[in-house]
Length: 222
Length: 134
Ligand code: SF4
Ligand code: SF4
Image (cartoon, rainbow over all chains, first blue to last red; front, side, top):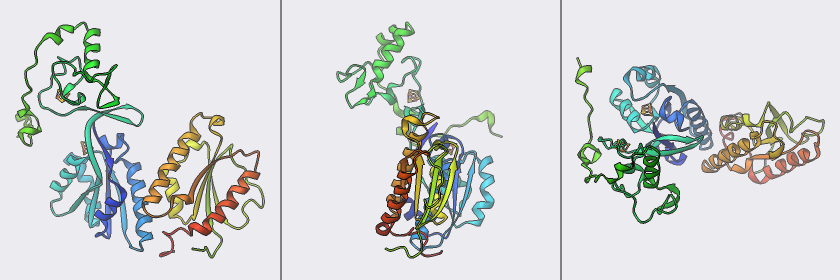
């Protein structure tokens, strides 16, 4: 999933200050799971903004709505009446969701309420970790299902550096060394031979470094 | 800023941490919200209490080790701390929200908590979000 966290409240206040009627639009998928943009977070943010604007003696009307996904036109449609009633939309989706809204409602102001962070997983309740950088050429099969591109701070592809210490990375004692994990896992899978294969420098053309990417599924296009 | 009228308090409590007695609320107007367990303390409820006019919000929960549902008091404390930072961030003063570990069997400390809250409000002032429209 895509993880994100709410922008500092004072930054949000500054963003929404020019508007009298605001729709706070949540997204019920990824950012709900990471406690940043689901119904609960929409309600809390609406309450905080109401208190804050009352304190400043500035009237504001806030409408709350959460749709299933802001990155899909089918779900976005549901927000149309609410959008028509308001001066601006404060989107609590990831950057893709915010842009999908802006594309769909070309004449409306769409503001980001979150800082989008990474593609990750919920490791334990309330703890999210980055697992994939969307490099466009996945080599997880070679590395036993652990991504050194994302989880090794130096993106090393041919084994650990000298800073691997008792299973942890020298950049931070709380960060596990991806290469330590890869070796352990390949040992469990009896695939240690993978470690003998030289991995050539990565071709980053398939990643964001090659410019914004587009995925085309011809078989789904009429 | 001095509060002219009797200060308004909202008191959230779990079943085992509080039992209402006469004269407990002298000097303030109080609204009590009973929760089956302190883990039901949610950020939105605390914020809504301020939106509804509370000058201060108190959350009474059992001692951490006595919570019947194991982690209720710990969760409640974390949520209260979270809302306190929000209140500070928007200039509402997080000191107007507090959590205490109490027991329903002993109302003495609870009376003191309420008294102290009322006197602290003399310094903190009334709910600043309500001055303008209420
Ligand atoms: S808009 Fe972003 S957060 Fe919402 S479902 Fe789509 S990818 Fe996930
Ligand atoms: S190799 Fe690339 S696609 Fe695969 S997990 Fe790592 S970053 Fe993601």
